[in-house]
Length: 597
Image 1 (cartoon, rainbow, N blue to C red):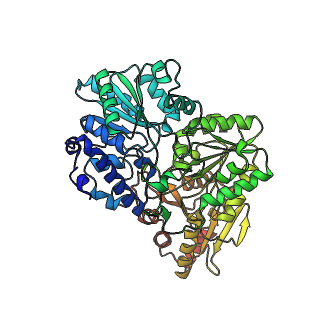
Image 2 (tube, one colour):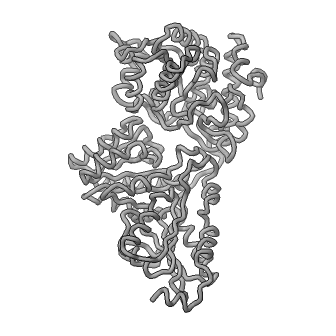
Image 3 (cartoon, rainbow, N blue to C red):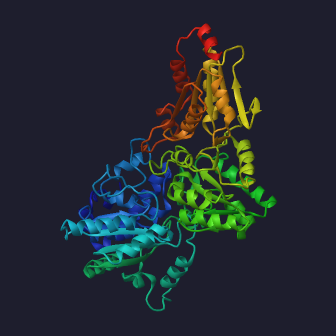
């Protein structure tokens, strides 16, 4: 711990620091962030950009009595440092350690656990109303939101209500970007405000807010004074702070792509990765889509402010007029894609799986109801690891299983990714989905043969048809290894990768009827997932073979290493084999033969 920072154990101690020493505090915080985040990975650039802003907030407001709500939450590291969690950074984003987002169990200073964008203003609206009804006039609500998050529709729904509510301070952290530069009319408007070119009331004033700014967000004194003006106004106020993402760390400032938004382990001196990474699912997808784009001029791509993270950089480089970044607006992205499909194009909507949750109504009513050819590519499906509960992409299969006519593919390797993506964008009579995890893509998992569109990956020789293992996507390789263990134990196993998890292939139901036991393996929640869909299909077909579903519980899973979380919930080869042996029991060969007849 550096000299000044060592003594700041809570916000009250920060208030005691003389104003002329605050630049030194900011410098120490930046050094701390670079050292700690480069050593473990996490969100570096966003936090380097809010150092002075966060210092000012904690000097003006009395947290936790005053509630400071951070939108998205990835820029809360400085807040955590100033609220007594400096030592915990040694465990950042590790199992049982410090979360990379606000977490109420960590501190009374964390009020919400949001890490989906555009939510803070709605939380603030509810908090303001609750304080008024409870007579808590001594409390203040502060919502910190970035210009990128302000592109989300939920933020504007909240602004519409906040402007006519009680006292609230909306701190607009305007750095001109989220992952990528902020897009659309709002970005143009904020650019004009930053340049002093506002002509008449700006959009916030027209909505009914008092507007303070633009303020240099790296001048603690200026931000403090702006916040005190907002408090004295005793009404809804927007404080417009202009900041620089990655401020004070040369490798981040020179990174024009995303200013080191989210990083792995880096050499803090150079900003370069310590470990060279191999090909990922994202990079494999990006290369294949670019190839499809060259052959198919009707294929267009949409992203919600995450062009590079979802693998669209090469497609955008080659076909810039065919990529649409709509900002952090997943609902709009999906319905806009519906319009593109109605207009004769084939849109590919690229999202993290967790963010599709926000647009399920649009998938259902705007795309599927019209049987439109829209392909959804869901990156980071399944357990993602250190980003924690809100970023695990474990709900997509359960949510999509209720959508009529949708087809969901889960490639198990890069070859199948290319095949299934090509098949998806060739589908013209309804929506398709291709999902894959956050991980290295790994070696191909070969098939023994194809059966009605499904791949048979393993078949025990000279053994009865005891167990059918059904696993698509990343769990397929694990299921093959489990089958090898079971075969060594004398249990006959067939492993099938359905390739298309939804809808259930009728041939898979027939195959289930020929085995004594079916075990499904998926990296999503079991409730309502692909395994549940197969069990329902078997019941509908009067197939009496028991179907046992392995997957994730209906729970919010903590952050940690992806492999450890999967192992904890029984999604390893050894665990799958153990469950199969327990369910298989000690039936004699005669009883097995009788069951098969």
